[in-house]
Amino acid sequence: MLIKIYGSAIHGVSAQTITIEVNVDTGGVGYHLVGLPDNAIKESSYRISAALKNVGYKIPGKKITINMAPADLRKEGAAYDLSIAIGILAASDQILAENIQDYIIMGELSLDGTLQPVKGVLPIAIQAREEGFKGIILPKQNTREAAIVNNLNVFAAENIKEVIDFFNERKPLEKIEIDTRKEFQEKINDFPFDFSEVKGQETAKRAMEVAAAGGHNIILIGPPGSGKTMLAKRVPSILPPLSLKEALETTKIHSVAGKMGTETSLMTVRPFRAPHHTISDVALVGGGGYPQPGEISLAHNGVLFLDEMPEFKRTVLEVMRQPLEDREVTISRAKFTVNYPASFMLVASMNPSPSGFFPDDPNNTSTVYEMQRYMNKLSGPLLDRIDIHIEVQKVEFEQLAERRKGEKSEDIRKRVLVAREIQRERYKDLKISYNAQIGPKEIEQYCNLDETSFSLIKTAMEKLNLSARAYDRILKVARTIADLEESESILSYHVSEAIQYRSLDREFWNG
Image 1 (cartoon, one colour):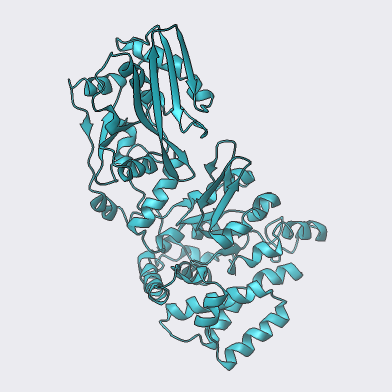
Image 2 (tube, one colour):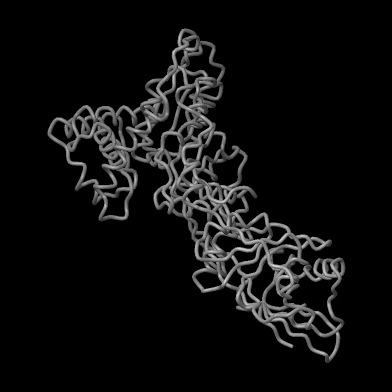
């Protein structure tokens, strides 16, 4: 008897329905699995056999042929265990299968028949709804994530016996329903850190506000203990809240990477990713034999924090150059190409020297060669892609001992939201959300300068030897500073402040 059952495969951050054809034939004995399965799927026969035996069923001693179509698409992982097992039972008449084709069925089997969670449930559920499936049957740990997709029945199962009983019409499965909008609104302002906890550093806080208002990349340069990491961790608390569309986009990526918790259904705050400096280039941008999103994609719609940036391998940093411009990363291999979104705000930090205290330390132990080698880990093209460079000074004792709280993130966020709304209205007819995304055409249209401002930026370009890309960055930052003041025109002091955020790296670079 031939039975068709449906699963799903992940490609990039989207899903593709997989038809699993199970044919049980009396003409011999054997188990044949075809359709480009990987080793985890090939090993599924052992898990399925033990799981069925432990719940009172068995794989029939007949010739079983299983085809996973489309046959030219490589399938991976143990998520097909449940669908293959149910297909074998249905094809061998051990369970009823009248409406089995109405469902996407996914889940990894333990030897005792319990179900383990799988990756990529959200894009699978979205695809199931688009293709008109009645519902989706998943391990219980994954169902909250899938339930945010409306107009789709999501059924939870803890073991294969519950799924068998469901198709035999003995016992209904638990149906999971979530009020997505209510849950989203309840947790949208749930931040662990606040800018009011930061003592001093008013200049750095201002730079952070400008960066958040325009979505600009920023690098903090200062000695150890000056508060660079503390400032970076609080950036998500002043960024605009995620829209529901952005939340779904971000959740899809984390779902594919298997980073969603069992109690989490929808990401409600912008992600903050802080990879260690020993990370590889593949782990940062994504890829691998079975492609997975990297840290830059996990930071999509959020913040990527690179602490002690020069400690990262230069090759790792250089692979970020294209994603920083295009806001997506393309992983190309011989047989496939995968695109991952990577629209993130880069926040980086570094010490001014290997010892960490130059130029304030009179006993600086670093040689000129060591200083130059340390600074050269950051290439000029990479620094050009970072809009704001700010020096973070050592915090004095009087500021640390002061009991007065600083300005709350909530107050800073209000100003950022006003600036973002101005930008959203300005670019409403374009595929642009904020100033950091604008290109040369938009810069020419929206970043007009008066004579004083033009003369100021010309002098800065000549004296600081800045590149053409740096010129564009200055204009973008100046546009953001003007938006924070709700000014239609870019004035000279807006340009002056923007130039101040470009000069710091040149000061050390040329030194």
